[in-house]
View 1: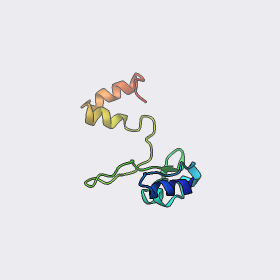
View 2: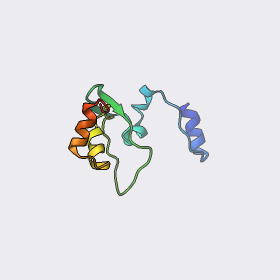
View 3: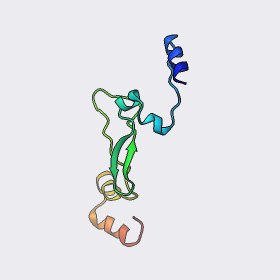
Amino acid sequence: AEAIAEALQAAGVPSAPVLDIAAATTDPQLCAWGFGTLLDHPVAGATPYDPPPYRLVSCPPRLTPAPLLGQHTESVLSEVLGLEPAEIAALTEVGALL
């Protein structure tokens, strides 16, 4: 697969072999992009994450572990939706929130 990809690249055809996850985490090009960066997830432990498939000059990617269910509920309700603490407490009390 690598020889074919190299031959295609030499002919001007953008190409790369399809890799399984074990090979992908050691591929020099993917590693240079941050592929398989280990982040500490509170439930799953050390888990490999991939950066976005693009680069923005003005804002580099910031990798964070996947959120837990309900982790940002309170901040979304208060900061985005503008609910007061009493309203959030009432929703929590009736079981509407996690």
